[in-house]
Length: 484
Image (cartoon, rainbow, N blue to C red; front, side, top):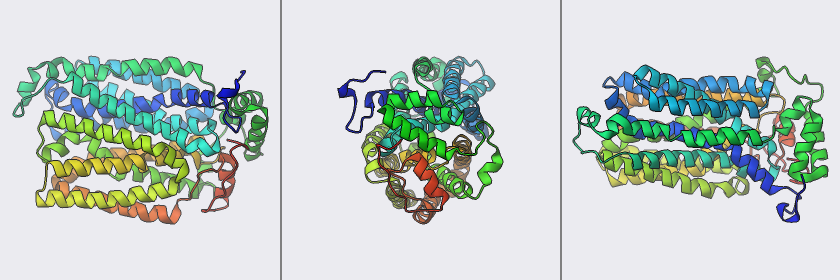
């Protein structure tokens, strides 16, 4: 691939090529975000259509996709180690397409759930593989920003779902019953268009994935050194490719190219890193923000908002999420992963305490909305992008696919527990008690991050592997020109 001078940055990197690859791979994040959130705005309408009144059935409709997420995350490691990063991402795109069509066309509740689970498998695959793929092709000093792009596309997908829901839904009377909603266009057809709109980005992702290359680190692990060298050469030239490939091969010395067993995750050099990854993955979910996205209707209703005001408030949460994710992109590499995680966990601890006090004292309406927006801003700036960055970079080359799968599997199991238990917590503890509990979890996360999580900015994946294997917490940055 011939590259003109204006395509190269000062380190000789082909930035336009890197951006193209990362943006296509990050489309998996966009579909993840859309598929994950669209159900929240459609909830009152499909519940009316399927006559859902039982809280358990309502919770199953909301959380069924998580069963697919767990399955997708569980197979992501095996599939990415066996077939590479590209083919499983293509499979994810196919699953998103099937899910979008199926949920929109479902004639009964059981079919609706089946297609939600299929979409969940796509989410599980994309959530593990998109950030990992991006990390494996990104230069060290820009890796945080590029992996955070995946979080940005997730947020764009979330906002797109919220805007689509708002544009499609007709106004609903504040005192409308489920029977009233069923008789409207919203209850008969509107919710189908909300789910069906996902077909457009799903098909685009499917087509574009055929035009991106395989990960050079997987190619090297698979013994395809010539292809890996060509791919790295397109990113940074011959010298960059030679040095990076040499670093990758060094991490694979004496290792079998294809067989990676679960037992390897228990090795002394891997186990402490895996524990950090799993705890961070679980913490990102149990910090409670996804409750706000999945149960926004109930949260805002308890604060005094009707359905129409709730839809607008949900869009406001999406806009704040997008704005602060954009702000976060350069900060991940400038400020660092560890500092942002500490800021996020401390900030959410304080905000949840204030939300608990607001619900306990009956100070609802606008104050609750402002606190929700503040919580989302902190999360979007810190825990949301940084967790995915850390998960994509801390695991060794040899077991990265399997370890990333384990971390993502833990994340989705934690998400399932969070989503399923919130109605129970809300019923048993009330909104005040629930948010107080999430505040305590965030405080525990703050302590763990302070004691265990290293700063990884500016360190190549190979150097990161070597230093973490030695148990180092203070890591030594490496030059971006040396390797990715």
